[in-house]
Length: 496
Image (cartoon, rainbow, N blue to C red):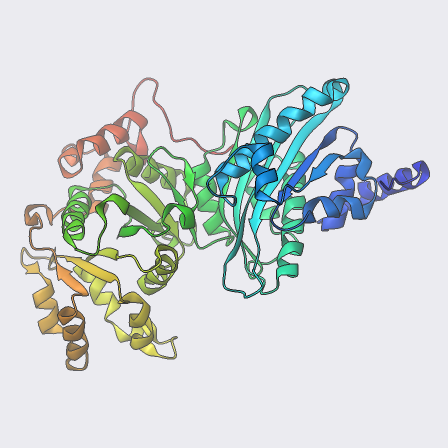
């Protein structure tokens, strides 16, 4: 093991003090960690060599940081150390690794407990194979203390490695691992930790599509908000969380599943939103290509729907998230404004399984506007290829025409289409790509969420009849959307 002489360490410490004023490189971050007298731990890396640990060895002074490095690459050895696991590149295996490695530190290093911030770093990764037929990805985690003898916390991320060379993927992994350890050990703000993960990288090389920060020192962190920040800050296009608020990794949660998606603003959820979901789900489940046991229903919020003036109100996002979760729904946050981009993304994950989209009639009208695709070389046809792929179906919900009680249905839409698009529409309809929702509750079509929101904010009575009981209860109990509350009320968690 290589160690810097004392004189070299002293001069480097002085240099590091000056470097704190600027953004540090991977090597500078690794060196600062090595020169810290309190940070000490182990590395366990499976599937891509020991690229993270290697960065600490290369800069020198690694004896101040590394208690152990290992790679249980063989499956039998891995199972013997961490326990049997069905899959080796998954979150369950990562947690097994963190449990095992972190437990050994205070057990074997009792003499260091009083003055050491222990950590266990682990990753389990699938890099690009020789034939380049797979998607490089991995689970990366850090279990760490913020102070000696303090409780441990966990930071877990999932990444997609996008370099087209396996060696470059390993290099990227090494950089991200150093960034994670440095961020958790030296940065207090969770959003800054997220943004620092790709220091020295770009989103062309690495995508972070799941982030979770948990533990006694991070009780103030709402990881649903962290999911939003991943998308907002460009680390990924899509993030997910479940009804219980726990963040999910999209590729794993939706792999080979039948997916039904309802996009909306949900500000707040109204009877119309619920009816759209229930009626379309009933029809979707009746499709012979849909396996009911592998059905996932998603409510989608896009960045466009979360922003009216270019700024995203994080409190407002959490209000909507709480309301949607109170109804038992899984939330997808995406930066795919165009439906065809969303479907293209989902198709790659679901691997040919049936996908359903629930749309209002005016959303379909937007899809058929040719000017929407002026920036595409292939125009409307280029967008329709992924949108109406082999296993995609659109369920169209009727609406009222503006300023009247007259219904606007899929039949009306077809009759009013420009002549040059009617043949295209008939092709889609004849091939069962479009289906009108026939049993919609038309008595609720007059409900407009913006009007309901205005009533809530003005303190007007009667808005409760336009939303499900659970929604009105959640809004009242927590004072969401400026609803006046008295006494002690809970509020949506937010990062401080």
